[in-house]
Length: 89
Image (tube, rainbow, N blue to C red; front, side):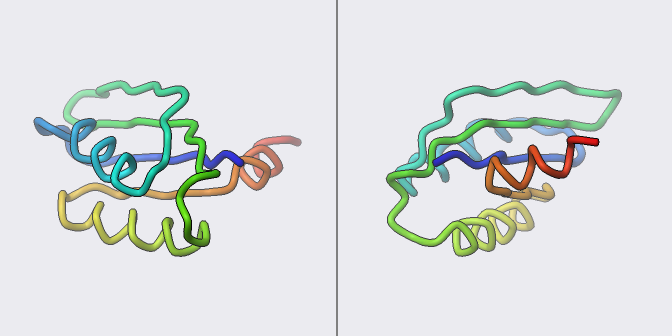
């Protein structure tokens, strides 16, 4: 099972390290990642295998959002199927 994780906010050092460490602690595996810096803003999207997390996706999404607040970023987690459905016309 896959989820799409988006991270946005003001750029600063260590964002990728913090998010990837957090996901690794949850036993999630980042399979693909893209990030960019637009002026002073950071944007990242990841495809994450969540089959081994051992908790509901909604719990992971809440924990990621809370962790994001601590590091000054907005982090959203969606099931891959929902993400795809939202982006198809």
